[in-house]
Length: 197
Image (cartoon, rainbow, N blue to C red; front, side, top):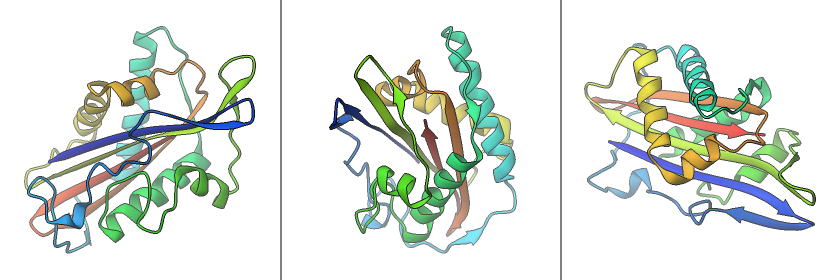
């Protein structure tokens, strides 16, 4: 199973704006018992996937896609990766899949709690303060090659209008990827968060 969601928070003048109606919308609640996402978690660390390698491979694949569209590559930002990783870990640990945590924590809150300031000019009087894509995959035979899994995840984002827009925004300069890999019963589940600045 796979799930994807995207969001961007920005400002126009001094007014907060949200680009994309999916930003605050939960794509699915993993613990809802839905047939298309796994419920009844048995969270164990999966040792068949190297999460650091997967994070690097996703970052490299994102830059490859940006270059194909004549865009600059994104710098890897370890602070953004820490923010992204904590969100992926939280989604896995609390059994949800959304930009907004069950207690209402948002992308903006996560940046603030980590002391991360993002302000990227998008036009003469508008700026973005961060963006986020998330992905979820779970399967009994999930791809174990990190390079191929990275391509699959980025393909999913690029085949989704909102994610594609986020990835191909010309003003982004930095990116952080955070991955959490767990066992959910007999399935391996991968939660991925991608943060931009």
